[in-house]
Image (cartoon, rainbow, N blue to C red):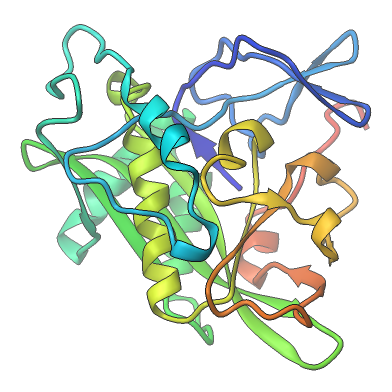
Length: 270
């Protein structure tokens, strides 16, 4: 899962042999640059926490506790941003064709990459797939400042192939990060997937942040990762209303993710 939204986590979280700490690099995402390893500590960018103008609830079956959601609303907008405290001025809506140029700018600036992530988004929009993409933008004063995309993937379950979705990428302009935009985009995307009877949404990302947003460790739930290069704790899933217990097995990315080399972490020393 590609995410560049700039939140820091000052508290380390130990999961097996992986220690999740804080990152100081805005846009240092899980896939493009990988976790920065320093004396056994993996650092990575995590999703922003907060509340937008009109909160979209997570799907009923897997919603985060209300107390947790309430704790997301205390972030102060940085100087120069146009979002008031509490999210006034922020609108989350479905992406349109008129948004494509601004969405490209969001991912170019959020990830510091002018081709890879924007190219991934553009390819996923037009790829033939069993499920249509789900795409939301965040706007402030009619300017697109954030974007999230869910695209078709598959679960190779023992009973049959199950059409599922992958959440990737998620990006917010640097000057609008740490204001709750990422959280609102995730909630809107999951609610839309749930309304379309999609049973599962997978991602690669921070278990601390996504774990309070409807996601949980996929391995522990009986799912197999599509790559050995995905750290176990980063492989996560949201089980939505249409999920059934027999839905286990191997998660399979679409060809577009492999073509753009956006699966798991690459070892720069290899």
